[in-house]
Image (cartoon, rainbow, N blue to C red; front, side):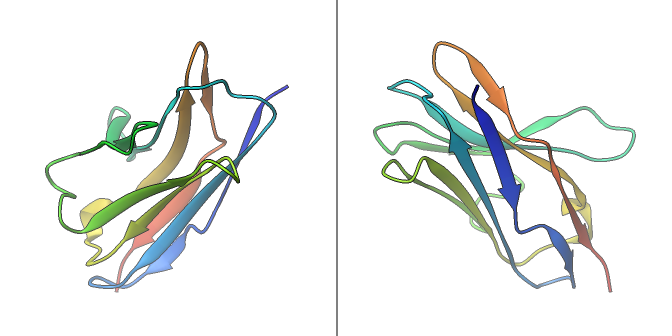
Length: 114
C-alpha cells in the first residue's frame, strides 16, 4: 500500500518562506512524475509544479520564480520550496506521484497572512 505523507505547512507572513516535503512509502514505479497541487476555498484544485524523472520542471505561471520543486529518488521524496509568499498562495497543498497509478497526499494547510 503506497502512502504519501506531507509535512511543512503552516503560517507565513507575506514575503516569507515555507518548505513542503512529501515522502512516499512503498513502490511507486519508475519513471514517475511528482508534483504539488493546491486548492483554495471555493476554488478548483490547480497544479502548482511538477518534476519528471529526468528533472524537467513545470510551474504555474503565478509561482514561477518564487517556488522551486525538487525530488530525491533515493528517498522517494518531493519538496516544494516556497519563497516570496503572497496571501493568494493560501491553500491546502497536496503532493502527487504518478506512474502507472496516481497517488495523493492527505494535504497540508499553507496560510499566508500578516
